[in-house]
Image 1 (cartoon, rainbow, N blue to C red):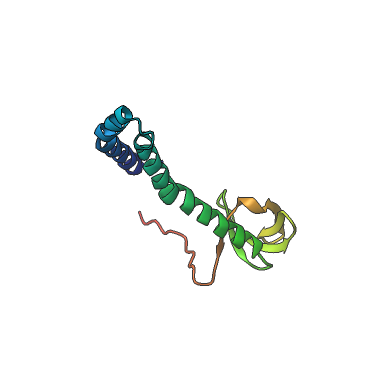
Image 2 (cartoon, rainbow, N blue to C red):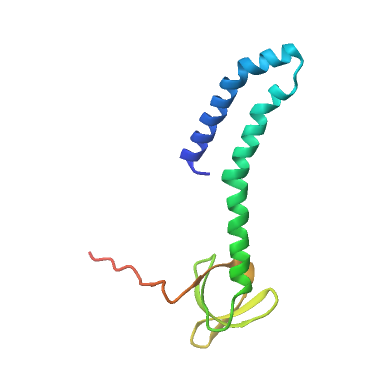
Length: 127
């Protein structure tokens, strides 16, 4: 997890705790249970909006990308291999890495599809 994000969440939780500490103490004396649940509710809403929902959206986009795979698509696997799709089966993709070298790849290990707009150029290091 990103350190800046962790520090932000920690600061946010402390802010919520300090803001509602007096209110929850007074509410506990008055017998109201809702005042004590308010900080937890705010934290849950925060986590849903900034962590859970974007992750679900990203997963749906990845599943759509995998379902749209077709022959001659250029792909990058999670291991970093560049390949060209030869055939697509249910959960397995046969891909060509180079001439006369074909491998079977599980669909879920494909990280991205290279489109015509993406330019893949090797990095040139000058000494």
